[in-house]
Length: 257
Length: 257
Image 1 (cartoon, rainbow over the protein chains, first blue to last red):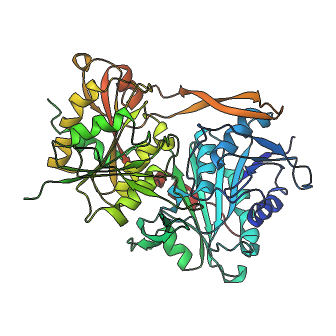
Image 2 (image 1 turned 45 degrees about the horizontal axis):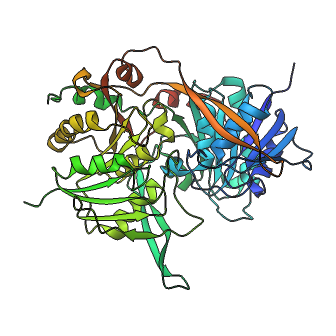
């Protein structure tokens, strides 16, 4: 039997510590094929590159991978070009991350790491995004590396529903402090932005976007609660965003001119 | 009573014909405040600008607007900076578009126009994205302009569920051929990509992403069916992407090390 073919990508770029941690875990489950951005693409969500050309370059020095490429595009571009140009067949699994920084709650919507898994789910590939609650370049991935294998093993054995991907987040605690793995819903909330106003050397105004997450969801069944209570969170996440609850009430409105 | 304050944005950029068509419709419902990208930002999805500064510039020559700004960032950046820096208060309505090109089915996920409405819904502002099935720069917006007022009027009178936005698409037919307005679910399907391989003058390979939509959804209750049958489609769309159907089955799996 052939070994599973595993596509690995991320949004922090091919040089990030997190993707190398993920490759080390993934190689025990199959042949690892990497296509990742050539530079940080955090916050790129599900963006695709349509106005400029896309370039790819092979990387020859990673013994843990079957083949490894860096791509000038977004994480979603990486998945698309992997599937359409680089891989000889559809992969058995898509793993994205490990992201430097938490992608719980609605951060899922802004994250390039989660978007890569979403693109895999659109193409009906079992797909998982992994993130840890530590944005530092030198973040410690040992807790994540200890628990990710059990999640991958479960998915290989049991499958995910068609067009659903898993958004996995690991809290910033030592492995022995982890209380368990919780299946959760996505926390509702919003980012409270601040725009840091500055002047450039030519006295023109510019802004840096900063902000903090405003958790307005008091439930205990969501991913923010799980992470705060030292659980690893798994949110099964959909491609179909239809608000089925609103369909009937909207149909009752009057749409005559 | 104060007139409603309406924030208008898009992803085709502030010079697009579509946003000006939307401003003309919107001004009959309230004071129009525009913050839109300074250049095309199609396919930017829910991306935010974190690695480079954001700039804004006021535009002084639009008599249909209260104030009008162009922004160097993405559509979602436009909404965020409007809310946090430019508008004195939360708007009563957010309108995005009118997009040159269809955003039905899963195009909703890739679209910057839909993302702006999604950002509005995160912030609990009644939000609607409008698109037409014609990508041309000089597309005819007369059908859209005839029917958009009835949709806006309904939303002002009846409200949308909290954190739900409407994704509206208008088929490329004359107004008298429109059969009606249909409330739909999001069509499932995927884009079949092709990467057009070329050589630059220095003999280095590059790619343009191209592709076509592969509709694998045979239902008659979805937005693709509606558009093909000359209906205007409205898909109520969620922020919470949790796959609630998968929660229980995933909880049964074994997560022991």
